[in-house]
Amino acid sequence: MKEIAAGVYVEDRFAGGAVGLISSEKGHVLVDTPMLPSEAREWRMAIMQISDAPICGIVNTDYHPEHFLGNAYIGPARSYGHAASGKPLTKYPTTLEQLASAYRETMPDVAQEIAETTVVRPEVCVDSEVTLHLGDRRIEILALDGHTPASLGVLLPEERILFAGDTLTDNEHPAMYQANTLAWIDTLERVKTMEVDTLVTGKGALVDKSVIDPLIAYITEMHRRVSDMFAGGASRRECVDKIGMLDFFPFDDDEATAVRKRRRGNVERVYTEIRIASKKKRRA
Ligand SMILES: [Zn+2]
Image (cartoon, rainbow, N blue to C red):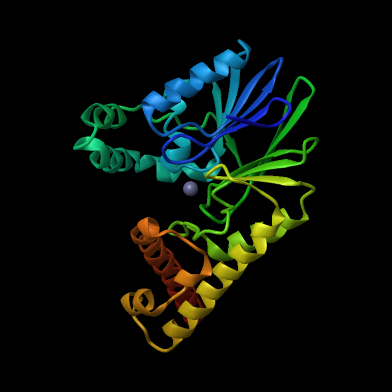
């Protein structure tokens, strides 16, 4: 794990996403939890080795399993999630089954444990922002609408650090399949105005604000291309096939399948948004 400021850590070696830890003598606040049960337990042990202060809070930056599932294996601790995560969490039996099936052949024990995981819903629902005072430490939990309607960030104003979750990517194709893309652009513009130097992405990359404009450009261009094709009568499938955009961010050959799949999800989402907006316009 990397200590990025005194008592502030990032661990990026777990499956799924990265996790953060903000420590004080009063207790620990966690940013996300590891997806796999064994890794969540391992993370808990690592935290206990830093100090035996209690784990007093878990902030989930969104409801995707790679940020959220480990809550069940870390607690008891008060968990903070966005108010809008309630509805997606009702679909978790399916989410757990899909995730378990990905491990069933290679790691049947892991699959079994995932399938039996208790879904720990947020105890405190955040609408816009909540401030925690932990000893001398000030921790601000902020709604960051965009990547999902239930995305949160964790801001440390003294340390000028923002844990941005999947709202930020380090020059790679973002995941937009549950996004409100226009809200995402607004959120990114807002992050640009925040007084922070270090931004932590959902995968644990430590970046500065220079990653924001390329991400805004990607979302904006995706919108423009899909809008043009939609206006020209293209189907969702045609938009996926003709969108291009792969050259926007670099990726390795072994990531190509995953990036194409992500691009398809992104195009389909933007197509849906544009179709809904055009229906509303016609009705107005
Ligand atoms: Zn996510």
